[in-house]
Amino acid sequence: MPTLTIIRGDEKKIISFQGTPTIRELLSTESGGPAHPCGGRGICGQCRVSVTGRLSEMSPRETALGFRLSCRTRLLGDAEIILPGQREMRILRDTPQREQLNSANEKLLTAVADIGTTTVAVSLYQEGTAGPVFSAGGMNPQRSVSDDVIGRIHYASTHGPEKLQRDIREALKGLIRTEDLNGSVRRWIITGNTAMLYLFAGHDPYALGQAPFRPDCLFDETISFDGTPAYLPPCVHGFLGADLLCAVMASGIQRSGETALLCDAGTNGEMALWKQGRLYATSVSMGPALEGAGIRHGCGAVSGAIDRVIPTGGGIIARTIDGSPAVGICGSGVIDAVACGLNLGWIDEDGRLLRPLILRDGIGLTQEDLQAVQLAKAAFGAGLERLLEVSSTRLNEIRAAFLCGGFGYGMNPVSAARIGLWPERLISVTKVLGNAALTGAALLRSEAGKKEIRSLAERTEPIPLGGEREFHLAFMKHMRFMPAVFD
Image 1 (cartoon, rainbow, N blue to C red):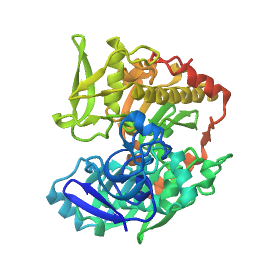
Image 2 (image 1 turned 30 degrees about the vertical axis):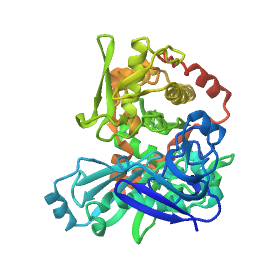
Image 3 (image 1 turned 45 degrees about the vertical axis):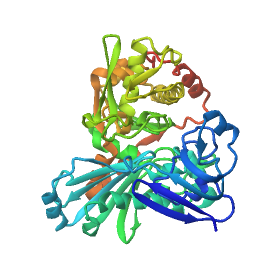
């Protein structure tokens, strides 16, 4: 029987197989395999692999790109593949000292998790303490199937949700297993968009991928996570999940008498406007470009990621996290880089790259990367424009604006406004919250918090945008890299 030898760093694993599977099919159960942003359709070119052995002939797409794609390369016999290390799979922040962890291990802990489409994060809380004793995060391993929600819904509806459920559950347990704290976790609180909670719970998400997109479960329930109770907060709609409500909880805008805006523009752009005791909310599909994924040199906010780009003397200076050697560019760096390119005349307003945009150490942005950013910002801008129109709100009425999630973490609002991603008029009232969904989920440790989020869900008016002529017209208007006009 033929075998595929997988080499990752110093590790080696051998898998036997039958028939002539694609590399994607054979590695579908392996963590850390190639990501497939386009769902394995062979159009994005992001599942590049280093593989040798008895392989199928290169497809026209592979020939054009000059390398093998895991979704197009079939194994005809023995082969060997080299996979990258796991540098993106774990990002630790605010980690306490070992002595504190040992002390925490003697007490019962609550694990609070946010399952994002691109990233996942976990914080551990001791009973009676306000802040976490441990926080960790990393990339969502479900990206090996597809970078977007629709691709995962299609996969789960076709093949069953078991693999995606297993992937995300193992990822969450892995983030805390590093510190040997599993045994002390007595309960979980897990937030995320509606599709991510479906997959965590093992529900078939078929209803989320078919018109009229009405979910048969909006959660606000406790299920078992390997024998430990896990509370899943309420969702509002198929496209408005518990993560948005948790972020609103963290911001506190629902307790304010003023009009306020909150935006979490990750792979799914979710935005909410609080006005006169009601929450207007909508969601758009943006893709992962603004989270540092789905672009050629993109990465998460890991050590060595370019997170800040500053123009200087006709050129640029690129800063990396921890001052480490550059390994890629994360979301905030992408936005800065495009803004700098526009200011220096290296990119025009239509998104054409007029000269190579190399930031440092051979890492830069390509024409395809710029197109991904354009699509993301156009979707976000169109969604925000429709949110303001439906709620009859003008920008000058907004007294506070909050940015959160991968979009808000470390982002420079001035750079975002320069590329047309964020309204210039809101810069003076903008506050960055970081992972507000995770912070808000932590408030649900109390019954009072659960009661408040249920009330918030009841006062939320969802604004569906799919198929709207007005949305598509606004989308085209926001494609250009220029300050956005919203009213």
